[in-house]
Image 1 (cartoon, rainbow, N blue to C red):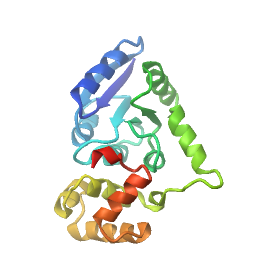
Image 2 (cartoon, rainbow, N blue to C red; image 1 turned 135 degrees about the vertical axis):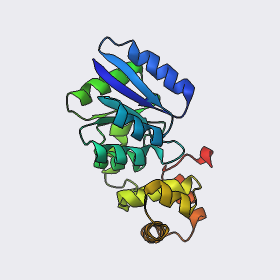
Image 3 (cartoon, helix red, strand yellow; image 1 turned 120 degrees about the horizontal axis):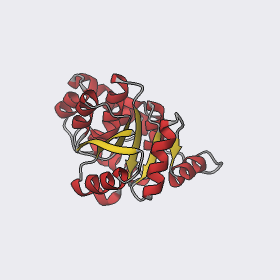
Image 4 (cartoon, rainbow, N blue to C red; image 1 turned 120 degrees about the vertical axis):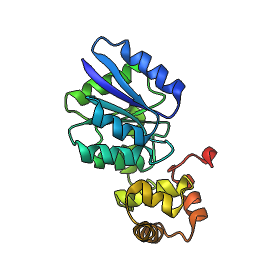
Amino acid sequence: MIRILLVDDHELVRTGIAALLNAADDMVVVGVAQSGEEAVNAVVTLSADVVMMDVNMPGIGGVEACRRILRHDPEVKIIAISVQNDGPIPQQLLKLGVMGFVSKGSSVEEMVLAIRKVMMGKRYLCTEVANNMALQGLPGSMESPFAKLSQREAEVVTLILQGKTIPQMAEMLVISDKTVNTYRYRLYEKLQVKNDVELTRLAVKYGHIDAGLI
């Protein structure tokens, strides 16, 4: 039986996905979490084989939660779930060690397939993500400047876009205020922006965030 930890900040989504996965003969949802922080703690206490992780959540968010979980236990298999299928996030997560990426619009059959694939040690990308990543490598395609960022810089960007303050970011990432400012300065230079307003506009342009969320 495949033991699953489901992480999403929306109760309706958690309940719906849990019911669908529990209907599979070889799967059981052994726990749910509504934030990245809860997910990190749950992985320590639960013996889950697979973590289904929502990418866009308040707090430390899904990306940072994945980083902390894999740092604690590199053997945990994580499948990211998101409404956004383009931009730099899928590649960043794969570099972290996440095994799969599925869209929230994916069918239950695809989610079940993704879980079974990663349990076999194989990576799984839903069709939309796979196509978008393939197109990014084609001549004439518009490469996202966010791809230049290190993983930590990308995490700081995510928190900036969530409106977090320097002290809040430092606490969430377990680093000093000075270090946060250093990452902020570096990512501004790499992205060639001068302030958070320009950063937000650039993030919308390249699909790093949904324009409807700001």
